[in-house]
Length: 64
Image (cartoon, rainbow, N blue to C red):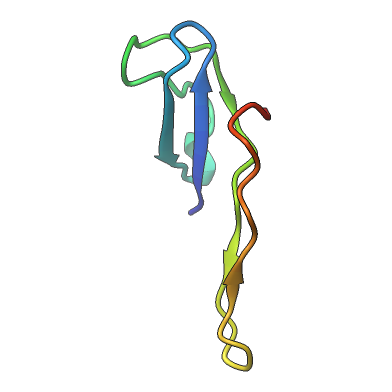
């Protein structure tokens, strides 16, 4: 169950949403309730017992 970052195309509000496999359609902006949202590219993290894990740098907010 990944958490995705979205940006509303109407009001430019950026928000995160926990998305279940069956819940990936009909995502609405929590600020203006518009359905024109775009999933953004976000940073990723991993945990590994051998090296402790790490996170990739997050791209600038201008990417989509």
